[in-house]
Image (cartoon, rainbow, N blue to C red):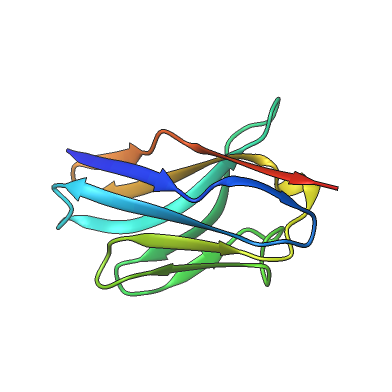
Length: 115
């Protein structure tokens, strides 16, 4: 089992920045990819960014150039630096980890961007 705990959300005005953190615990040695997803009210959960154990990254087109995913050490923790935030970035952000045991999700953290 893998447990994921997110931190760093909150409220900010458009153009501002926030940094999300995700700490993994439990059986973490088998994690291959970690990432961030988000879900806005009335919408489906969508990919924001992922990072592999080899350091490869992938971003949604809507955040490319504004958000940066990184990690401290081999896998843990994982950060999402969010700059130039827009009101449409408002959502609950979820940390995700994929390992040979399965896929795991954090409890989610709210990010609110006001105009």
